[in-house]
Length: 414
Image 1 (cartoon, one colour):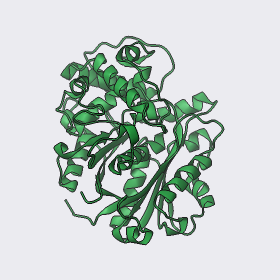
Image 2 (cartoon, rainbow, N blue to C red; image 1 turned 90 degrees about the horizontal axis):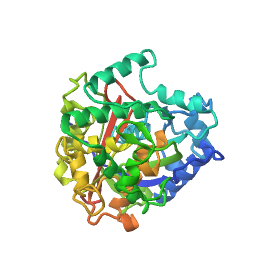
Image 3 (cartoon, rainbow, N blue to C red; image 1 turned 180 degrees about the horizontal axis):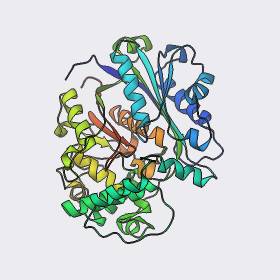
């Protein structure tokens, strides 16, 4: 594994997530970017490269070209290259990965990653077509045949009602895990209840109300074993992260508040055997990230993972090695993954509560990581937090995510 010069996070910023039909993407991006630049005491003229992550603006609003330039140029960014990218729900993390690559390549000292999404729309069919585009549009029936093979031998009651196609995908994943490891619906409800409790301490969350395990179980069914309180909502929002080399930090005058990126890894998957859970795309990314950072799962103090459903947290807690394979739900039932537990996961409230504006989600995870490592998380602050990890996945290829990004971040000096 090659060794790189350190890359630092000098500033973060984000909007409160929610549904804001009256707000434009441009307005949300302005808020997040201005907060980020202010956090780093930076000006637009300091930034030497910009990466703009978004999934659905072309589909929902028709902004099919140059969305980053249209959102960012009015903020004073001139001459620096602006690159637009779409990588499913991993778009924000992929934007950060590219910004870090530019710094590591020595082509810039200061770069900006931005992620944004606006899912509030009266055209529900257009929004649903966005999610249907998250996997192979040329063979949708074949995609679900493969998923049915993956969850073969499990019971799935027929459920009517509106939902994203990805809830059915997560349902297949969850049922396969229940078959192979004995995970239960109550364990998923415990994870969701924990994350909703965390959200009551985060003013940036879309939802900030607690749910008991019983209330989660009693929620409207989506795709067995999932209920509405176990799943992320449609959301609007934006988030931004400013990354620097050491020379960039010196230029900005940032000192103790900088966070070090110990590793940032993006991978695609393999054609693995369905039952080979340890070849999951996120496990591959995590193994590489631990090697790059020269740490192990035992060194991690807390995590932000992609809980588009509660099962997403269960699975990726295992993929990151934070709990043994097959014991993600057991760890949640023991209280290990809640604030005050052995390894707090999603102290922000996660996607289930904070919201999931697709292109912004990965950078919102980084916002929470930085806030915790700076010791500024208020009543949800994790005592002694020095090393945090993020996991963000996007799209579907075969039976798993099409893209995965895992990052390891350290408080300055770690």
